[in-house]
View 1 (tube, helix red, strand yellow):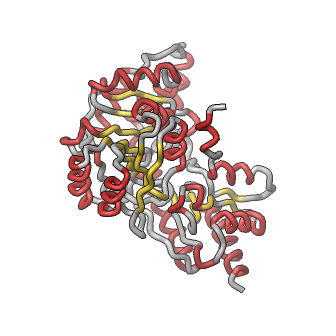
View 2 (tube, helix red, strand yellow):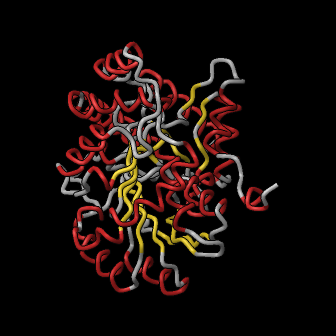
Length: 379
């Protein structure tokens, strides 16, 4: 067994999601799976691709017409990559793993925020790298001072960013861009920015990928799982300077050869014809966010208002239980599954993650039960 495998654990998100299936009548608020259907035109495009026999390999980098559309889409946000600087992958997860495998030598240090999506730390460990966590502000926004301290103390050359953020819904603020730019230049950093939730930013969207002077230092990761509610169709992408693409393509090529052909045809049509569907979905997520946030505030939780993605991360510290104990009890007593904050690293302990990409009816039922649960705990 590869010794690096022993350094990682199964996903804490999946751990609680899998428990729900074994409990009759349980409500899950665990997964980041939008409850909206895949847009109709995407489904039609995929069926057409099947009927026309478009089920063979595509180029390793993905369909040229899809890469052109991704380039146009990112360009609308001021992020400039041409089609030859884009590689289509089997989901954002493959993009992450390909990037870390290509970049990180054994023992090299990677700066990763805490709390954060658990795949970041585990991918780094799997390729033999060393994780260095940097802390965030109390509202989970980026703290440039704390980040600089982590850079200086660790000597790391690699920085992971992720906005909007899973599990907190924090975003990158405009005022932080210039400071972040100077920090990256000062310490000669390479940045991996995971922006899977960029289409679900509820305030103005800002990205380090928009800073043109940093293009040679930034690797941008995106995808279609969340934007088009097509999580099981496994389609993502990474973007980077054209001169580096051949080395990254080696890892991608030997890993998956290419992303699924019919998913690529669907995403191509999605970018051309279905962005209105995305705006509708986002409007509904904002309503759900506001409902969940207000309910949690009324219950007395300390909680930040998310500004993107579809997660909220209330503090449970006042209950004097670990996040795992709290979520285990909630599932046992009320049949509601949320994810313990500890699943997202050291900085997540004392919190739980609620996904509000479920229906309003499910959210109402779940929050009623959470309210009953904490009232019983406080007696």
